Length: 178
Figure 1 (cartoon, rainbow, N blue to C red):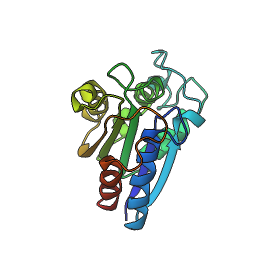
Figure 2: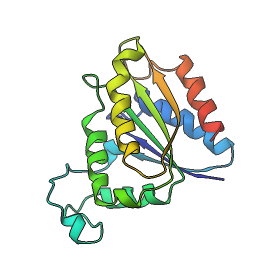
Figure 3: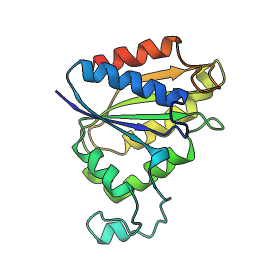
Figure 4: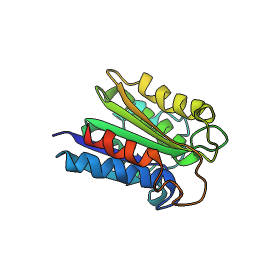
C-alpha cells in the first residue's frame, strides 16, 4: 500500500482535470492504496515572496495559509499526482503558487513517484509541452523523484466534457497500477 496525494489545480470542482483526478483516485483506492485529494480551489495558497524566512526558520513559511498543511502531506506521500488545466500553454496560477511555495521544504521532499494530469481545449499534445515541463521542473529539483505517468486530456473545454474520453480510462488504469 502506498500513500497517494492527488493535488487538483482545477479552479472548477468537477472540471475536466478534476474529474481525471477522481478517476485516478478511484483506481488507486481499488488497488488498496491510501489516497487523499487536495483541491487547490478550496485552499488558500499565496504566492512565494522570496523573503527566505523559510531558510532561517527550519522550513516554516512566513505566510500563514494552507501551504504548510499541503507540504506536510507532500512529505509523507509516496506518490504525488499533480493536475492542471492548460492556461496559455502552461499550468494555472493555483498550481504555480503551490510549486513555488515548495521552496520552504523542497530539500526534504525526496524519493517521490510523480504522475501528471493535464487538460486542454486543443486536441493536440503539443499545447501541453510547457505545462508538462512545469511539472517536470519541480520533480527535477526533488531528490530521487521518478516520473511514473502522464495523462493528456485533449480537446475538452466545457465542464465535464472529459467524460467518455480515453483519458478517463487512462486515469483509472494509472491509478490502479500505482
